[in-house]
View (cartoon, rainbow over the protein chains, first blue to last red):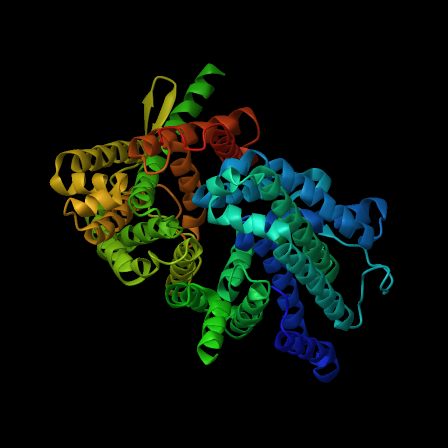
Length: 320
Length: 286
């Protein structure tokens, strides 16, 4: 699965375009949408490692996202720990929690795993809603620090956030690429195809499932810290909602689960649709934006279940 | 203290029977088609609103709107199966999971669009007040709803065990291939089961509307709890879902009583996680 010359050229061209985007487009809204696209794409890539490759369809990624956001924000407000250290700490905490919950769930497959992940995320959300040390339902407002890269905080412009989000996404893609092309990636796919056959062939199913969940949790928590530093306010209802978990699954599926670039394409299609409909139609609280969104999801899963990536590669094969 | 505890147990049973009725519809769909219907909570919401509008527009008591809710959701369920869900039955599992999520988001926001996100309540009708049995207060609407839930479940059980169509549904649930070989039209069974599953939750919605708030997002929580109940009871097991529903109702109220009411739903999910850890196939699953 080496990158072909065409793919490399295409990838580099896309990267250059993304790098000069903030220099050309100076309005706030497109920039905000792009930042969200990067963040959700990163979450999708993280989901893809456990869902798309290892076949564990998690509907509880918001728990890891929230744990990342809460860990760094709590360390910053309570102990003045630098957010970059908080970023790593959040990832580590999320990975530990993921291992603790993933181990008992290592026998669960298919729907059972999906529902267990929802149950887990709901427990985490309820707990944070009542945890006084974490300010319970009130949430945490991050203290205002001086604007600098070391402080991971910028007040005058959103451009630095744009580049950081892009860098995070690229990091996640690199991790996913190495996972997908390594021996581990083959183990993951074997587990996805058949739990039992993989086990018979000597794959340590429990261990590799745990590794997949932990990598995924670590990357999702990084996105969580990014969100906290970007919005500067978090509460359980904004970082741990089931809707976030669903959004992550949807965009991964829409783009094409099980391909490295799939979730990126999914995020690039879904997030702008969601944001634009929200801004145009959502302000009255009439639900029209979400109505259209739900309709689109239904149509896509009916007629394009392999995702946009599957569609594109089929088109590519036809042309060849 | 003992009276309070007894009262909590009674409350738990009353909510538990309701959960059972919501969950058996879900487990039927899940068992026959191996599809998790994430729109199940929204079907409940539609049932509640149907009963609400029949009352507000035509003054029909929720108790009499039960057959209408049953029929309406039956037709809606068949329609949704035929034109949406059946298209993804052969697709990847993820598409099956996501398609019902799409329907759920669509339905709850359609309700917001049509009826605003307000909370509504049907004013006390035929069923109101409480019965006092010793020191225990029995809310009349909740008690009637629980009796209704038991009757409906028994009817479903008899339908499945005694009628030819019911047996065909059970056969399809056990082994689709063999059922097909025996000349059962499994596609028809699918849409029938989806219709019945929706109709059952429609009945639950009508009962629930006699004492619970009616609003577009009401399905979310009930849907989540129903998934836990179904998985707890065991894949596709109707008896399992019925028993698990009661257990969850009890766990929720007693958990709230002994620990912290804020954690009552977390306790439900915790019990679910512990159960499937020890017994991945659920209480009565195989």
